[in-house]
Length: 613
Image 1 (cartoon, rainbow, N blue to C red):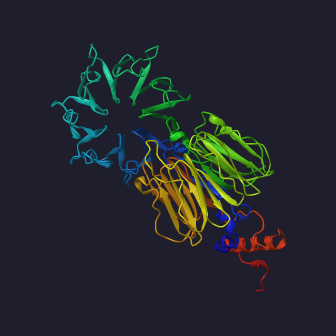
Image 2: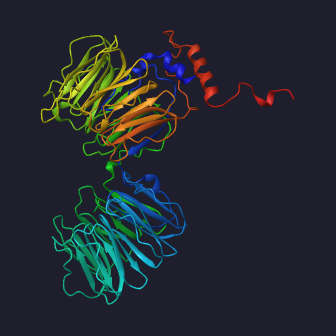
Image 3: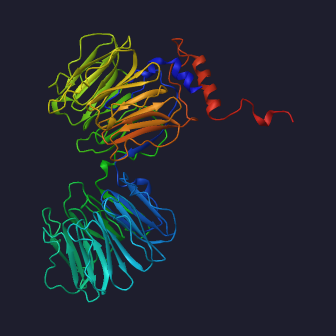
């Protein structure tokens, strides 16, 4: 029945889409739902809320946590499967490397998974291991006899530990290693360009070690820390007072230390807030490449720093009717007409204005647009070239925020553009027969009422190579979407055509004809099938082109490196307008909505209590 509603409302397919913003037409079916996000993020808000964690490990861009029942959970960057741990409940230690992971079982054996270019995720056999450490492209393990074994990449000798048997702790950095002897001295080996293997004198009295990307940390018995190696971001400058520490962790270019009172100290590179510490009572710390994790005494985890700006994990509500994924922030329109934003907010682009009279949203590059029910437009966020300052007026029916320019469609079928206009992308053609618009990277698209498409702006990349993203093919189309340097269009028969730059196949859609919506992102593309499932293609570094399974999706939006979809909540209905296409909103539309409600919610027209026995 839902498909019938789509067919009764063909204008619904004339979406006004940002690089990826899906904007509903007045004929939108009466569905609302919750949002699912995927793509780049390393701090999963749902995972952090759990309270049965006993160990943590922050890797390159993925995270691991060990549960009290001996199972492992992983999250974050997972293009090599490094965040998908094996099954089992007999694990006692974990270690996340750059792109691979290790776990130690209670029987003394090791399992590895993730990126395995040099065999770093293929541990040696044996059951006498007591500690593990995953580095850049290599790994280390400590045996019960005090010896160390290494495997994986060995270009700088990092996988060849010294032949001694008095070691009690190990730490694998990106290209170098540290090992702690039972007498409190440290030995280092591997890549040493920054002096990260040159242990300062006196080399004695150490009780803990941590090797980062290009620097090293050592904790002494008296609670002080010694740091050496690469110090470009001050990651070796221990803050004062240098005392009272009980644990250390060296990350990519920042450092963490845990004090005996449960507080954390951070220093070094802080571009993403990775060295800006939370308050609370903590028992363990782990510094990743550009983010950090800490374990509370109650078993919950706190994460901070680089999170792909947090643009993918959406707020947990189920009353959303439209979504828009921008460069590094996201917007969602609630059924009550209010807007919520999340992700990167350097310019306030994820902080929408108050009010509940909005009917459409579009997230661009560090700025946002929203269309009010009175036909006026509001903009916020970064305003370079005036991209976030829409023109006055209240006769607008659609909006689209691109990279540096914006478009709006008037009720009379004309288009207005504003913002950066170097390639003419903000200067639409002077016609009045347009029904949909889409602003991309440096080009724009518009759909005419006769189903043809017009494009304007740049047809080239920044190096002058011609890709033709602003030169649409002939034909009869029902929806358009302009990406960064590629474009998509949906035909009336449900098939998709793509053109422009085709890196990773982003402009080559799958050959099917059951699609009802499209979204061209920065480097990838999405399409929604008539059965409610999603397909993705193009660049997939962060999994942004690998949509979740299922067939209960009603909207999609592809951003730069992340994607969003609305999950249908079939029992939450809103009377959205003229559902039976008779040009009136009346009781018959309400009846059609009620009929779909009965079907989708698996309800029967009878009240069982009233049926005669």
